[in-house]
Length: 360
Image 1 (tube, rainbow, N blue to C red):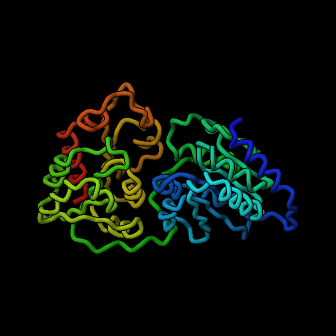
Image 2: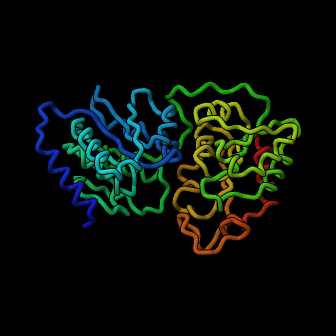
Image 3: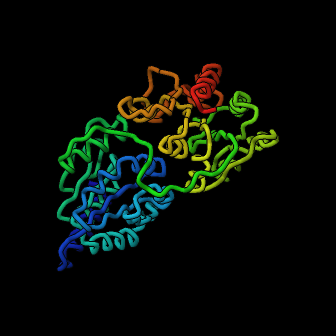
């Protein structure tokens, strides 16, 4: 047992010395994942909201950056933002454990497949009902119900659907549908516009600048182009400033909520595997994802059972696909082997095909 496990166990015992007199109420959902996970969560969240009894509140505890996607969620959902890195400080960890215990939740559910810190937060609630997914988790102590949802290498929508099936005892077909039922930002009034998303937090997933020049050239000449990314992406990739010398190309550095307005007003999105690209998919925008082979079978491309017709994935099949980003090969021209192997002519042909199907 690791020292962190022993300390958590001691803190849980100390918490139980304080008697809670009120009747437990409310559902706590816990996720330690980033913005991309929140995009997908929005597609299945209505099912997890059903875990609450009538008039019972539901709260999502999530990372501060992930909370930037909260505009996709029902207004009834409460958000508790947390900088998870601060949990490495014993004082902060104890304070949060006390807050969660005093919340007196009826049910606490971990949404992560990898449990670790998230499981400790669920356990700290000492709720009558606590649940987590069984699988690749290493720390499940204190969680009363572990649900087997199958392999960790599977589409997250399928995994969450199976999880909800068991929690609710209600089987439904998995679905990745265009976002409805929430008040989204109004679509921006734009001329015909394409949004490019060339940047990745994992640099070897990025494609060469020249490829994006070719994509721009393949678009209708009267279209406008917005190159989307955080301002730090442009700082790390200063060569992309050369694109803005083209008369129809501008940068787009809005936050996710403002970007949603832009995406809803655009005709097409082309990009690498990012939270913003998956957001475009759930907004119903014709989308082309230029992907590595790292997550084949684990969510990118999406499983055929939940694949919307307006999204297209382009990747190179590899014997090593499904490595989950743990590439064993040396980089090729600064890219992962499966990214460098993407065929430029075939990608451009797919852009043309999407345009022909109606993006124009």
